[in-house]
Image (cartoon, rainbow, N blue to C red; front, side):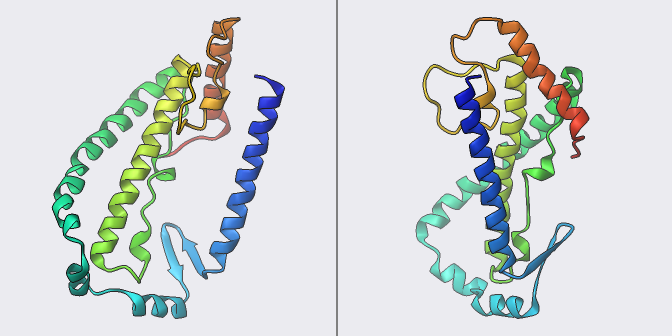
Length: 202
């Protein structure tokens, strides 16, 4: 990889780390603590949250009509999402050990914690959990497919692609034919090294 590109990637990674640090500091000001998978707010914060919660009846009275019309379509997507979840998980659990690819931890991507927010009513919590599941599942699936692509075809596209996964920048340039197989093997070795460096758990 070009040294300048590598430097820019490292700078982006450093800025992302700095951003996460600042976000964590701001979140700390909201006065909540994590205990395992539970989120605990200070009592004063919980009481303030309860005061702004909209009751279910009032919530139903203020919902836009188009929301009712599209709800069956939106929640109907739960079936293909659930099937994707099952299929992609079975795929990585059966194939990744054969390829010596570190398995993706599902819990790092599918995070369900909005049910601890006292300012949401039960309907809003269900909506939030559904969205969290869908977005997390797609990110989880993307990482599984990204590792598969790194193993079989780590080559960039000729055209600019929006929304590329985190591994894409390390792939070979389009048309970079010199020592192709040796470079692919090097990228495969990186996948195997991830198993030794950081064991994954489901």
